[in-house]
Image 1 (cartoon, rainbow, N blue to C red):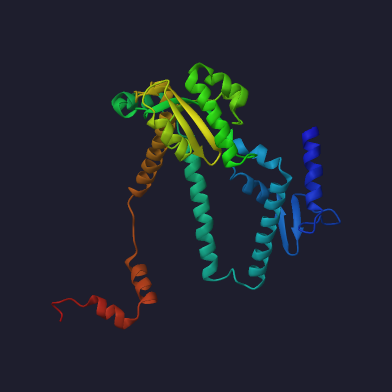
Image 2 (image 1 turned 90 degrees about the horizontal axis):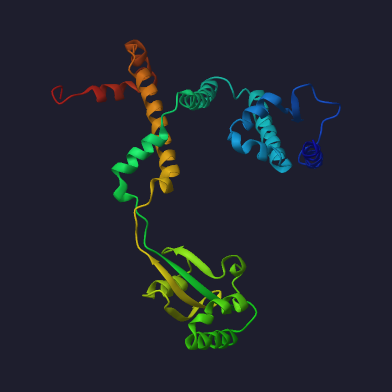
Length: 312
């Protein structure tokens, strides 16, 4: 209840701004807002909100700024519609163009509902079957586990950074076992408290180019890179492990494969339904086709298009 009351309070503050003021006296029941000749009904607002995925809807509505934007946009749409109707712009051919747009919205909503209402398939079984048939494609790329120490250049000159990094490098060259403690005591990487300088499963493209080039140039676990300059300062990198490509277990790819199989299944359901409808017998009026030709083509064009080599 507190969240709701707070939301209403914040929304009313937004609505009190010049962009959207409350109407007085009170609006008719079911009307959320008006401006000029435009108005937003509860049904129109709900129809707009229904386009937001259900899992995101509550979070969206708890933002007063987002609700205000929807109301303002719907009001402007309603005002423009009223202007067009007042000018008679919605008559004649335009009303059929509007009907086509409305039909398209209805069709898309119906197709989505129809597909979602059909019985689901066993997506896990489908995913597992695909995995077994394509196991050789479920392979990780080569990666590396590395550990690094960073001397940051945020508050030091390049010369100061190099000098300090070289001091650490000299200590490591004398006794490599001090590296991990140096990281804990002196590394200026913001993430050092949570990862102690360790980066696991680093793949090409994960890190900045200078860091990546140095890390992948190391040949054996325990090797050090020396001083590596990047935009963040100077790194000292140790190779901990080389992870060769491997076939992933089904559990590692199950979620992604099931999502793919669900999408494919729904597409098959959709196209099968459309094929069933398209397979029904169609009856076409030749008289109306001829009338269409008469409406859109001049007589000379009709004669020209009907000429054949034999008639020439």
